[in-house]
Image (cartoon, rainbow, N blue to C red; front, side, top):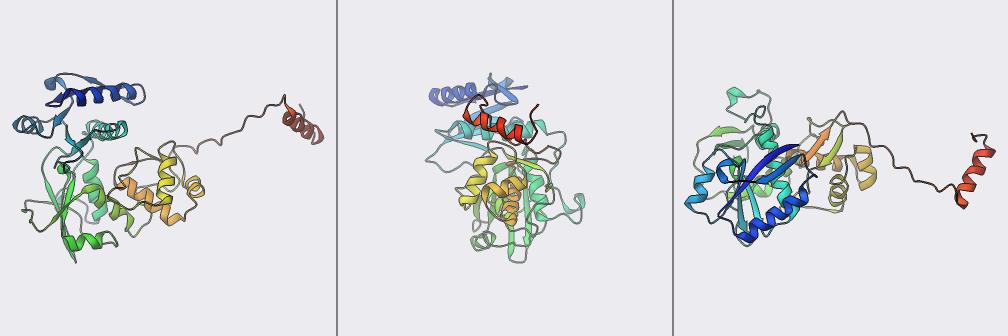
Length: 315
């Protein structure tokens, strides 16, 4: 198990106590163990939204910062945020994202200017690369399309888009170019939206139902529930989430469970993968079917033994 340290800066005693209590619940149930330490020794910092200069001091450092804000306030412009009061699943979600970023810093790479990326890279691929890379700078990325362009700020967890273009994004593929790093100023006319929403709709409207980086014969599992507060949910999605948060499943098992068509399932898996919520393993064997235990000492057991005898299967 990996052990990491976290510290609290400018937070009230009730918030700190709630977080520590939830960490005790998580202890032994995760591949990462979390302990409290002083800010200078911590791997991750939890800072108060209203911390002022103290918050900016820590956010400008090289440690991931989780900005804790009251749930009646607007979400801060930060990579990692946590509304207060929060639930244990929200805390687990943000710590999983940080653990993934800390453990993948050696291999993760950001999408760069056109000269640094493959000529055939799509908008979806470039967005996925940005979402999986550690957000340790304030870089801004732009994508162009026939209907307009949008900007992505991974470190802030948001994107900027014209309100009219946003309505089109929710209903169809915008045929956007691959993201490239720019230094453009953000117009006040652009709406600021959560980046999860952009990832979800990009996958939902892609030409290929199943994302090309997902193996059709693989096993899939969700890290946590998607945020259906910003995207539409339905019975099929809720049913899939309920199963995939408990166990890994293959596509055939999921189709039977949700009673949906293959296209709808594949777009759901692609959207979850694009949003960095899906764990997929193309080498994992299918889960063994559950076998119901039969009490052979009872009446039903006698019936089974009789059938075995008639069929010549008795040992």
